[in-house]
Structures are given as C-alpha cells and as structure tokens.
Image (cartoon, rainbow, N blue to C red; front, side, top):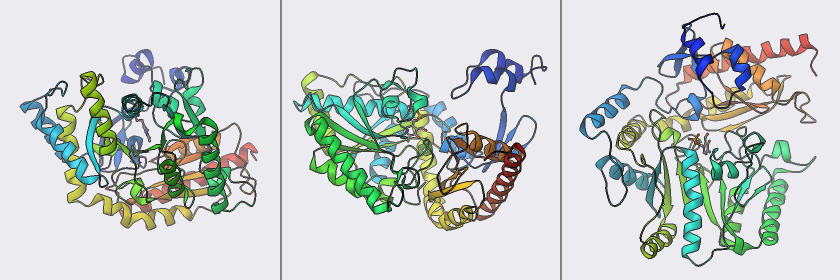
Length: 460
Ligand code: PLP
C-alpha cells in the first residue's frame, strides 16, 4: 500500500504519529482514511461504506452529517470566533451552556467549569479536589479511589486514575496517589459460584477495608464510570453503586461520576448516575456534549465543592488553573445546538426506546461458539470473546480474537472497536431500528467469519 507516492496515504505514513497505534506496524499497514459521513454511516477513501457502530469514539450522538452544528459553528465564528473566560471575562455561548448543563444535571449541581477534553477535565477534577482540600485545611486528604480497567483519560493525573496497563506501562504512571479497586465485572472477576450479590458485597468490603487501611482522612474522592466504557463495556453488579455511595458518605469521600461516555442518554437514562440511582458531587461530561464536532468537556459540581473552592480562591486571590480555550465560544455554541437537537428529536428517549431491540438483538449471539458474555444497557454494549466460555478463558494472545472480529466486521461494513477481549458497540443516538437490524446482520457475519478463521487456524 506504500506504493502510492504523493498520496494522502503515503503522506500519513511519512509524517503522522497516531495515538493508540503500533507506529511501526502503521508504516506497512497505513491508514484507513475517512472522507465523509452521512447519518450513522461514514465512507473511506476507497468509497467503502461503514455503519459507525462506535459513534467515532463513543461520541457522535447526532450522526456524521448534522448541518445544524456546522451552521452554529459558522454563525459563532462570524460573531465572536474566540474569547476566553479568564479573570471575569465571559461570552454568551459559555454562559448559556453552563446554564443548560445545570438544568440537565441532578438537583444541587449548580456550577460548571469547561475544558477541551475528558482527560483535561479529569486532571482538573484532581486539581480542583486537591485545591478544595487544602482550602478546607485537610492537606492530607488527597488520594483517589479508582478501579482496575477504568478509563479516565491519559494526561498525567487522569492517566493515573485510569486502570489499564497500556496507559501506565513505560509512561511512569500512576504519578498521583491513587488506589485501584477490583473491576466491578461479575462475569470476569466473580469467583466460581459467587452470586452477583455476593460479588457486590465482596467489592464493597474490599473498598471499606482499603479506606480503613489507607486512613479515611487521606482519601479525597472516588471516581468511576457508571458503565465502564473503554476498559471493555462493563455494567456494574446489582447494588454496587448504592453501596459505593453509602461508603463515600460514611467516610466523607467525594463521588465523581465520569460520564464522558455515559452522559446524554447513552445508558437509556439521561446520566449514568441516574440509571444506577446515585448522586455524585462532581459530574464530568464530554463527547456527546458536542457530538465531538468540536472538542469540549465540562465539570459540573455541587454547592459543597463550589463553595469550598470559591472560598479558597477568595483567600488566595485566584483559581490558578484554566486553559486558553476553556469554554471556547464556538465549541459551546455547537454544544448548545447539539443539545437542542438531542432534545427536539428526543434522542435520549430514542436510546431508551431502542434498548430492547439493540440489547436483545445482540444477545441472539450468546450461544455463538466464540462468545463468552454479552452485556450492556441503553445503546452501549460489548461482546466478550472467549476460547472457553465456562472457564472464562480468553484466546491467546490477549485481545487477538476481538481484533479479528473487528477486522471482519470492517470488511462487512461495520465499525466496532476491539477493547481487550471485547468488541464494543456504541452507535450514534440517531440510530433507527432498521440500522440496528443491519448492525446485527453484519455482526453475525463477522462472528461467523472469525469462527471459520479460528477453526482453520486450529485455535482453541
Ligand atoms: N473519561 C472517560 C470515561 C472516557 O471514556 C474518556 C475517553 O474515552 C476520557 C475520560 C478521556 O477523554 P479524552 O479522550 O477527550 O481526553
């Protein structure tokens, strides 16, 4: 494929360093170049059509051709293309979007801080919480609790909160005080014969033992994705979030709900914390906030957090943190228009209405010889591949079967994402029942082709 001199393909190989990519392998395989989108579909430079069943990176709620977002960006660019929000400056799009997010988030969350990415948002959460604790005269209360397999981003602090080896190895992370608890995924981490309720009870005991061993006065916050996304789409066991919330309240630990993927209806409820019935002190949202047409993330905090932070800024004279593009007017204008579309077209309701068709549809593959477990809620799901379903044993090398299924799916015109042993699904919220039928048909063909391949290779 390198024999295309002067092509985009050759230029990419010559000049680009891709995230989450084996760069040496890329020099021979080259890029898949996307050229345009249409609804839930995208098209590559060869003219091939794909259903984008991961919504890009779990993020494009309104699909890939929403001209209203382009118009909103253009209108804002013409009016006020850039302004910042440092030192009392403000502009209408960020004011209106903050107001909207306060309206949409749980009762009592009244203040919004904007960043450009989920990673920056979680780094900001860490710094905000540390700043708050120093302001409250609790300088020793700084540790975070997270979970193995969590994904909270890749910057120094957010990457430390993330619980995935690839994000730590040789990046010298974790670099902040964080304790990773057991991943709350019953199928994988439950012991033989352990019921879901017993698994939950064991995880909560582990959490409490950890808090006591570390000393509650040193633990500032617990951070979690209501449904874990990039670690492999893991839905929590029954009663887990209520138990975590109770322990956080008991030991005065802040709760951070990382809703970067979960937010805006993805789980079938407006927020993941609402689906699972807990109330965080801090909620982080991004991705579907603008459908990722422009980079934007928001941290929404309750009055307790705001008051502590605000008091400390009054004492020190400032909050010495912020980005040139915090609350960028064009990104905020696009976010507002995106939320308007989500509301007008009731896309959060669409996710709830299509949950059964999507989730039950995928579960038709439960008995497929390659499939270990199928899980998900709303419009997010994962199919975990297993060499031995009963022993919950994965194929070797790790992640190879999920990659193979995703490769066959792409050939069938379906983009899904291989994350460890799982292929992940997270289609745009505008998806229809017909689209879902097509996603299921292409998934079935990809699984069957992967099975034929596995048999031909003699894999077990
Ligand atoms: N938090 C969660 C739950 C995520 O899924 C992600 C990205 O996938 C992030 C944070 C990091 O966001 P970003 O890639 O915008 O830095």
